[in-house]
Image (cartoon, rainbow, N blue to C red; front, side, top):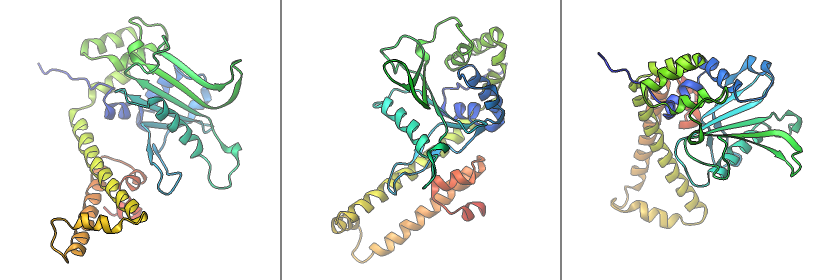
Length: 304
């Protein structure tokens, strides 16, 4: 008898496919309804949107969040999965929440156009050592608990603090993340029938999906490394270190061949970008996402 495998929703690609695809929006909607105290009609038009955050400055940091959604009235719901504990996690969470607030306005637009940003962070580690509860909500309020504004809300969910027995509607969803064996998934659905759909989806996902995701992200990592090197070159030139950079680049090359080497290197990078774009199109990524990742013109991507 063939052994049945379940892909854990803690896997980055699985988490994004289960909760971050428009075709599975009913799963995401059901999860959010157990957690957020917002009007039910807000879910009537729950839409998965581009998770890439633009640059504030020309040479600023490009941000990428796990899942980003908008509601009927324009509220932004941002969901992050943090499997491993990293340094400065609280600052990182604050940064991405603030970026999604500031990115809403264009030059000259009024602040009245700002919509609430709700950031939900699911941690597979202890982030809030000072708290005992596995659900912690933060708002911008004073020491008398009076709310200053509702524009930013942060909810931290810590899986290691989850009790063994159900204590509310959110519990089965977080238990879903911690299941490791087939028997655990089966028991979860038996006790909580509302979890049948996400569990069934995890069961259908194949290791081929995981391999494709790995190959794509490996290619994107190489692109990031090349972009970092390019940025170092730009910085060196801007600071007047062009001569030192050129000497370093010329090592191992015969004098007079630098120009030809540069042209060949540029051509190679262009080909690699095209190859990454082709793979992303095959995986069904949007033209806008491919444009942000590779920097290729939209017309070029459409013609691939």
